[in-house]
Structure formats: C-alpha cells, structure tokens
Length: 476
Length: 147
Image (tube, rainbow over all chains, first blue to last red; front, side):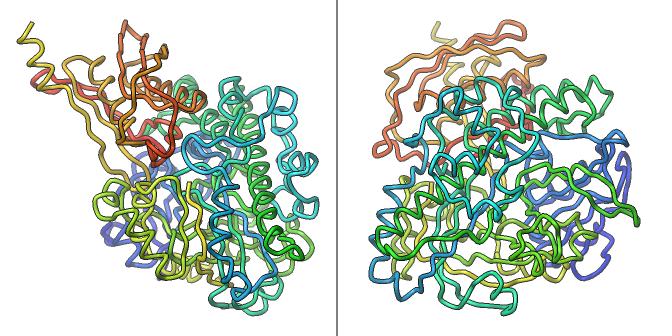
C-alpha cells in the first residue's frame, strides 16, 4: 500500500479518515515497511468495517494484517448494542475461537536433543493431523451438548486435561452464554469425529526452545528461562465452528438486508446484536468457542502423554490459552466512560494489560501472555499485554506473522520435501501427512514475524517477553 | 453433437487464483451449471492433485436467493460432504432450476498416503464472489475458499 493514502499519526499508527459511508476512521498499526508490503485490500476491508452500524471509536488492523474476507485478517472492531451495533459472523470467521496455547515442559533443550526425533515421531502418531484424520473421541448427543456448554471444563471432567489448566484459559475454560440448541445438527455432525484433532492449513503443534529473553521480570512471572522447552498448539473449533460460520453467514446476508443495513461487502454479513438472529448467533458462536477450548485442552493432554512417556517425572503445565477469532462482550473506556462492547477480533489476540481482573492471580500483576505463532522454521514470540492497548485497540494485538504470499505462489516456489530436509539440517523436525501442505506453509511465504511483533511493541499494543525457536513441528 | 462437444472443450475449464491467506476457485463453462461443475474441480484441486477414483456417488441439493449465493451453497455442500464422509471427490454434475440446485458428486474415501491432502477447506466465502457471463457467452463462477 502507498503510505501516502493515510494520515500518519505517529511512527506506527496510520489513519484512514472517514469518507463516504464510513462512520468512524480506520487505524492500522504497523511500521512503514509493513504498510508498504500490505495488500491494498487491507485498506479497503478496514474501511468497509468502519461502515457497519454501531461501530465504536475506529476500525482497527494489527501489524500482521492481510487480505481476509469481509474483515481483514488482523481486524478488530467493537460495537455497542444500544447504538444499533451489530454482530458479524464474517467478523469472527469460519474457524471460531481458533487460538494458541503454550505449555511449559520443565525441560531444557539439552534434555530433549537425545530424543528429539523420537518425540517428533510420537507426537505425529498421537496427534491426529491433516485432512481425513479423525480422533478417538466420538460424541453422542448428550456428550456433544455437555462439551458445547462445558468447554475445557468438560474435557477435564472426562479425563482429557487437568483442573489446574482452567484458570489459565480465557473465560476460565468455559464460555458463558453458549446455547447448543442454536448449533445445527449439521454442525454437530461435522464435529462428531473431530474432537482432539489438529486440522490442517496453518494449524500446528510445535516443540520450541526459549531462544531470547527481552523482559526478564515478566519472563520470571511466566516461568520462562533461556533454553527452556515449551509446547505450543495452534488450532480451533474444527468442523463445528466452520459449519456455524457457514450457516450464519448465509442467514446474516438476508438478515442485514431485512434490517436495512447496507453491506459494502456481503462477507461482512451481520445482524443487530439486539435481534433474534443476533441472539441465536451469539449462542451458537459461544458454543463454538467452547468446542475450541475443549479441543485445545484435549490436544494438550495428548502432548502431555507423549512427554510423560519420555520424561516420567515431568508434567506439562499451561502458561496460557488465548483465542484470536472471536466476538466477546467486554468493558472498555471510551471517551472517559466505561461501556459494554461486543469486540470482534478476526486474527487478532486479546491483550489485557497488568491488573486485569480476568487474569489469574499468578499473572495479574504482569499482564496477559500474548502468544504469537510464527511459521514453521521461524521464531514465535511470547508478548505481554500493555495497559495502553485498551485505548489503542480495545486491548488487542497481532496474532502471528501473517502471510506475505499466497498458497498458490508458495507452491510454485518451494518443494515440501526440500523444506523438510533443509529444516532437519538446522535441527528442526517437521512431520506432516502432506509434503504439498508443507510447501504451501513454507516459512518464506510469511511476513517477518520479528518485524510484526516489534511494530506491535512500538505501537503500545504488547511488549516482547521472549522469542522461541522451533525444535519439532507437527503440521496438519 | 460434435459442435457441442467442441464448444464444451473450449469453454469448460477451471483455475485456482491467489489470495493472501486462502485460495480462490473459478470455473468456466457454457452454462452456469457447467461453470459450477468446473469450479468444484478447482475446489477439489485445493485439497489434492492426486487421482481420486469416482467410486461412490453422493447427491446434494441446495437453494439460495440468487445465483451467486447458490454458487457458495454448492461449494459448501461439497465441503460438508467431504468433512462428514471423510471423502474426496473428482467428478461433479450440476442441474440448476431457478434458485434450486441438484448436484451429484463422485469420489472415494480419503487415503492419506495416496492422496497426500494438502489442506482442508473450511468454508466458501462471499469474497471475490462472481457468477457472470462474458461477451462471448462463457459463464464463470468464482469465490475465495477459507482453508
């Protein structure tokens, strides 16, 4: 994008002034290079979101923003129900509550190296990954309902997780207000055999090492030290979430029209929060969030079993579990007044600063861990939410590197087998059912994650705590 | 008869087109139905380029208020059948009557070793959604699919 199209507010804030049907400005947080490299579609999509009814303050895009559908990936927008605000199925996306969890192993790199390859193979065997993989867990009608209301609590009660994890999962591991009755039979059928599966595309399970510490004080609170080994899982609500998204997107195109809402893009399908369909979607979407929370808890349990096999005296403990495709009701200060807002984050991470009441006691004084996935072969980051993020973007930060190149282009440029061999030579073991999938997810197809997190830090959204490097990556 | 076959041969084709995060599917044909069938081949190619044997037949039907929304419904019907049956498809037949579509899919269960499926489509989107005929009367049907 041409930076001249924006009003530059400061080094990392780029403002699109309201024009035409825009109700508020759009603000992108990024450095100049990231702005230059961003697709023009991000500009267009961020401006389109600013046209939706009841939007508060501004339509935001994070430093990793790229062309999405409806919302840009990396988009954040908050709506006020009392001002005709909307909830948008397109603003949450198909993979409801897709997110990241990071677990501490209590091991050092030197402990892992002798069994690194064996662990890679065991994880690949134990974690169902890729198209056509099904889990060993199948849910009948009663269990499906219990899972959709119970989230990670349900997984723990069934023995697929540990109770001490729950306070370190957003919403305490269970999203309130879930209504399984609003989830269609087709969506439930799509999930029937998909509990405890990783999925495909950019989803992964990674064994990582702490490569660099930026903020020793916060790292100590997060129990992170140089060369510590961690396990990070990136996945979401699987087929159930995809089907909820698909069905409500269709219904909301019609509902928006019926409510007199002019959509600049049909993918921004939405409905007033205070409407029958708005209520139904929120109930279904919250059930989808619980499905994702349960799924990540189960996958964490599978990873625990593998590590316990190799290291019987070490038990993985959860650092944090955070979603990046959601709509959540939150209190935020706008123009000096506390307001209840429906905050959509589409490929953006909630980033609560120090002292936030929702954080567990052990983390509250430091602030929320913001988990930034890298791309196979490159660094990941752990950041901490900054207090200034609330005023900047309703307490939000980036979620990953963000793609710089299409899958199509990546496939033309790289061979999956060669990437696997090259990374193995660097001591990174990739396991995947598909070499083509590896090529499409080539590290070079992503933006420089280090530039993205630095921009987030300079923008006052979240601050770097540690950089992680991969040791093993199981790709879907 | 031969003339018809020739025109099918020249207009019926499909392609994938790039999107930052996901992938575009586009089919061309002499009718909207044929463009829909071709776009389904583009969707199948998102998952695998390996041979998929047309051993099992599945029928789907869907309805939508207009032809573009019907196209998204068609792709989503295929995605749903792939997911719940754990199958891949390689042949498609479409009949459109007003706002209703009856489709037939032929394929086989996923064989991970043989098919090496690259990624799983989550849903068809309304982004870059277009169903239209060009000046020569060739129909195209396209949208972005979230993977």
